[in-house]
Length: 362
Image (cartoon, rainbow, N blue to C red; front, side):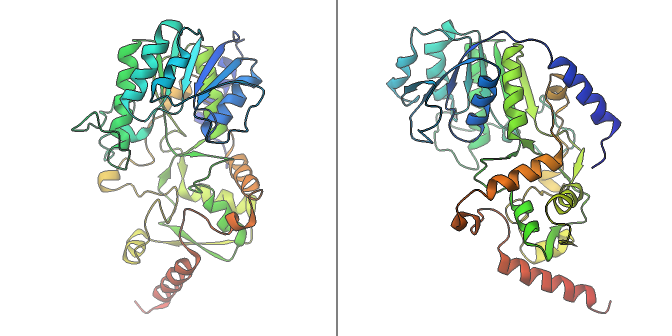
């Protein structure tokens, strides 16, 4: 994909800012062994920082045996195990409701200088308008004490986590709102579906006409930038994904074909037809959400503030290849059962219907 002058200028600015030497920090991770966590821990270690992990020891407990680990459940009295310890920074990848943040802050806030909270773009209440930025209002919930995390509560609860952190440590919180996080170790297949499907070849059902904008962020770009934010003591709220209106679905899938399997044939089927066939955006056509109705701003959210503060974006070709290469290291049974995307039988049926429609007399 050819790089625009805007992207080139942005990357030059990032490279300059990221060359500043960093003070070695003592970093406490709340979490750290899931998907984003390990990449961020590795990024911190690569920069020479001293890392401690606090988690339940249930997810990938074999990871990072060389690091100090404190075992405990942050939502219980176990959080007191962190009392009277000093760290420079806390990176919190595991907070889902405000009680979680408040309990941690009550123990830690007097002994740290910065708190980085991983939130989500799902905090926003209204996705109907293009150009959303960090000032867009966030969603609310009737009962802020609810701790059942589901599609309705996830975003508003994350917004309450943000507010709790800022109240506890005003001006010393870096709130990161990622979009779709992709890359090696992503167990959801929400992005990986495309390179895996295109590798299989043949006719590949593709959504719309390719002009819809999409957004994502490579987990390694996010991890490295989060470490950069704590090194440079950058605080505030940041959307973190590829910038709005930069990338189309066609660019993504054309690049998948180029990198993974040039023999694959993309068959673009329009939105109205896919709706008739009950092909769901996002779930069955991953990454894709048509910009209409309540999702009228999809793919057009601003990440300009993050890029101005050092976020970097690796080439799409690299993201695609690395996703696919990692996926091929998984057991064969896992590779045969993608968790996201349209099932092969349904795809074949929909493709058949689309071809029949194209061949029918007007």
